[in-house]
Amino acid sequence: MSVFKDAGHLFRFAGLFVLAFILFLVIRHFVVPKSFGQYGHYRAASIGEIAAHQVKYAGHETCETCHAEVFDVKKDGKHAHVNCEACHGALAKHADDPGAMTPTKPDTAVICARCHTASAAKPKGFPQVVPADHSTGLPCETCHQPHNPGMDAAAPKAPVKAAGGAK
Picture 1: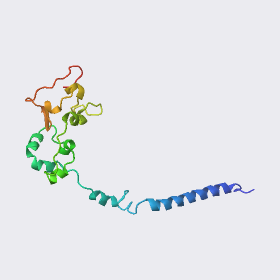
Picture 2 (picture 1 turned 30 degrees about the vertical axis):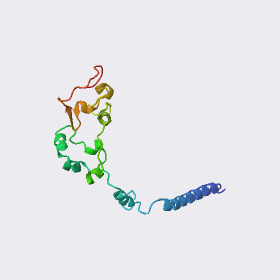
Picture 3 (picture 1 turned 180 degrees about the vertical axis):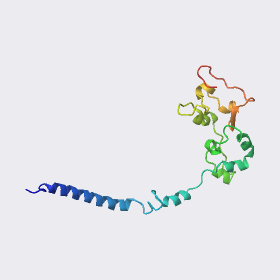
Picture 4 (picture 1 turned 120 degrees about the vertical axis):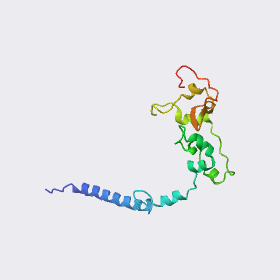
């Protein structure tokens, strides 16, 4: 009696495994880009492709060179570390040629709510409001100066619902 009496099943299975592995290597050769793995576990050619994309963001330093009066208001406020383009959008075209593109003024009732809508996931010290209760739909700039958002004493107070609304 042979020890390998039914070994044919195992050899066929091993043959299928080897065939599948060879098929995988052939497909991998045609599918994986040649530059993959050259500088680590990514496609090295992507560096040049990404660098070739048109620049969309100018950076807050570029904004501050022309808009120094806004920078002076913003630098001491709570938004001192918020980049201009976080609210105003990508402005590289405007920075290159101010006449070619005029930035739109963001709707503060919408843009401010993106960061300041109340959420349990935000730190307790972060200013959070329930927009519907807080301002009854009025733009935030009615009471707050967007670049330095403390309460603006000169602005009229927005009506605030007393029950459950953050002030």
